[in-house]
Amino acid sequence: MCPVKFRQRYIATLAACVKLSSDHHLHLHSTSILQHTTTPISPAFRGTSIMSKYGVMVMGPAGVGKSTFCTSLITHLQLNRRSAFYVNLDPAAEHFEHQPDLDIKDLISVEDVMEELQLGPNGGLVYCFEYLLANLDFISDALESLTEEYLIIFDMPGQIELYTHIPVLSGLVKFLTQSGALDVRLCAAYLIESTFVLDRAKYFAGTLSAMSAMMMLEVPHINVLTKMDLIKDQMRKKDFKRFLVPDTTLLEDDPAETIRKRMTVAVDVRSDDPGNKDALMSGATFQRLNAAIANLIESYSLVNYLKLDCTDEESVHAILSHIDDCIQYHEAQEPRDPPEEEFDDEP
Image 1: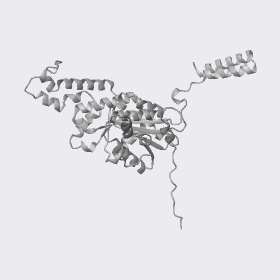
Image 2: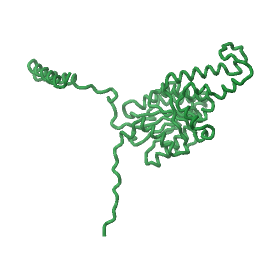
Image 3: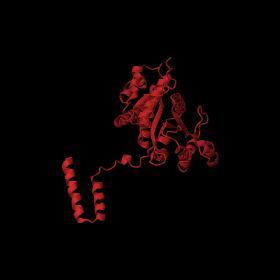
Image 4: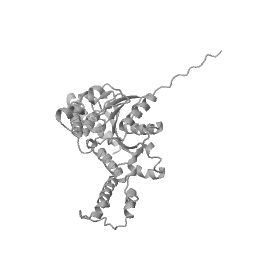
């Protein structure tokens, strides 16, 4: 309906209400009509805090360089006159180059849990996060006073079961991102080592864990290949680019597969007989498993990678730029006036 006809119908309806209603009822009918003719507010904007907070959750398997990346990121932010709030959520971490502004070990530690409850390292860590979820005021009290100028960096532990099939982190993410006192615009950064590309099975296993984390946490997500300084002398840049977007063709020229094909003994790779010793020793079953995982990853087509070399300032800046884009950090910042230039008085 065109705007003119819509306005005419609205005026006619309002006039009818004037004739049939008292002044009190007129007010009620007019309010009702206006509510029906006003465009409803999108759910995405309901309850949105005026001043949101911004954060990145750094995740990945043990030893991929999460704490090193957090250190490089904080240093880069400080050099660019940006504020960072460092949150350590690894209850087993001990050494930090930048001391955390908030440390989960002030609430609970893995050592205490293992000693008192007789749990192993993994069970103790899961208990620590369950305890954290029962005491979320530990986080909210520390974060609620932060302004939108801060980037909150959450340094996570390396047990990937927390990101894949145990729903403790998803509960934490929902608490951080829900509208209210915190309302953190959160981005997840999942890290795996770039050296994984030398072993195709390990590479696809890491990619599968990254995809699982993406689907469980349901927040803006980037995936990063770390320690690029260790791989640049072992693989050409042209060959490495193929690993930035996982696909099944990476298995076709797998060096391990090439070696298997050169074996003198003919092996039936389609054999499902567990007693087929040649098939087992040649990794035929393992090969089919890798192919199935690669096909699953390609069918979802969710994962691609960015490159990170923590020794290179430009590489860290590039990752930070992607994080800022995911959380729309710059869109909420007030423009700053450039400093006034001082001129010498003319003689």
